[in-house]
Image 1 (tube, helix red, strand yellow):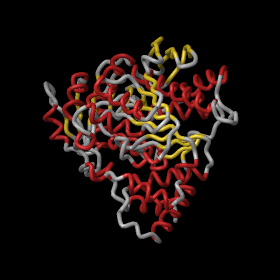
Image 2 (cartoon, rainbow, N blue to C red):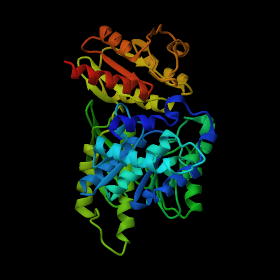
Image 3 (cartoon, rainbow, N blue to C red):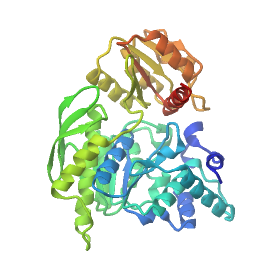
Image 4 (tube, rainbow, N blue to C red):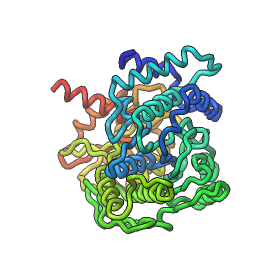
Length: 448
């Protein structure tokens, strides 16, 4: 199997990220347990930090992964979705799985499953998760940092047995699957907490916090709440960095720097620090003494890891004069955080908003938060079944007459003709839109 054959094989499974999630019946953890069992449970071969929540999962994952990498460990990272290249989802010490390994392990999965009578059809995400766990086992990593795909309790990644679980801020998303109030959503997200593991949570609305606390108590899982059990303080911000202090569980980390922008990223950084400190405490009780972080080494690794962390398409600046910013905001809470970051961290003359959103997302919430910022709104759609039509999004734009386009490329070209050097082009609403944009730009520069 070569790389393109591997991509086609994965594409033969139903990809609900692209076509949309139709209901709760899609999720069945027994399917994933069965698949993993066929391959001798690769997820049990490395200790795990498991990350759930609505906003900030990818950022926390990047912070944790980079801190542990800076401490000298071999660290596997599994995230979703990808923007351009499917291999983006699986990394070891920030290096994507290469095409040969991707093909090799995908081919092994195909050969094995072809000889099995499963009695069910796995999903794209289930097969991809199996691929990630199999590859990370083969790499003999020290730690796996695993991001939940959707929800938590029934997510395919939830066959892991984590040492630390992290719950990032919970808000409304996928309500037709996870529930229509924060308590129900928190119940699904907190399903990653396991007996005896440490749970680190971002600050939450009381409705969600009560559910998480109750879950931890029932499982005898130590609970750490960022903002209460540990703190953080803003020092400085601009269009390129955040500088802040973190009061951790064991120590104070002063003048930390992050290239991920926004107040919410300081919260994410604090959660990551809490997770790493908890990991250090857990391992300090082991009968052997691993090369673990403590004292000065812990501080140095945390500060270097926070500074090196990257998370594409989270307030990512890809061009200047005019400044072009990409962000994956797709519900009201993430759009509000993006709005606050744009106003707080950037100076610009006019904002041109390029917006494309998937069906079933909080279109009203995103539009109400972001459209008032814009001088001009350009609506577009990704080339997937799940993309909402621009003329339907238009109904949620008040007091402005949006420009409608039929493709991401057309929208980008239109925004460039309208923007002056001191303006900002903000492209957001869907990772599929951002992925198409990045792919288009990569092809453009390859032919320059």
